Image (cartoon, rainbow, N blue to C red; front, side, top):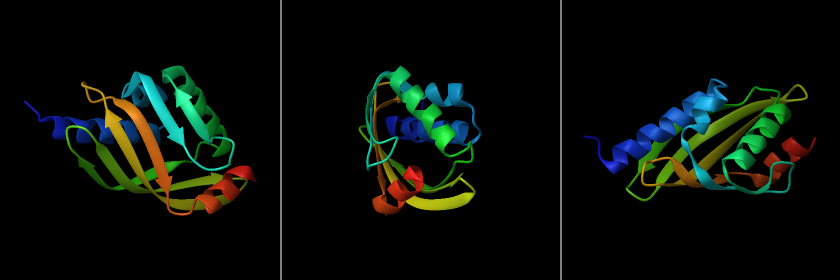
Length: 134
């Protein structure tokens, strides 16, 4: 039987892989129904999103903004029973311009390992805002 730590790492890996492959339904399986999603900055996707439907709408809007070109390259996934931390680099395209951003995601998993709360922190929020506001 896998430990909570191993389960949380595997759940995160599964979610990021599904999103990279544009399998949104599979990615949503890794998210709790009552998720609280925090997206920072001052751009069209910034804000707090409560519930799976709101996050689904956010991700669909994000897909439109990035013209379906987003990919997260995961550098490391660290986990405990209570937290999962994902460190990576995200690359996407918008209006013919490619943007790369280093990120740290903090996930608070529910008892079953699905994301109950999600926070993304980026290296240069101003550059991300400029890219998504173009």
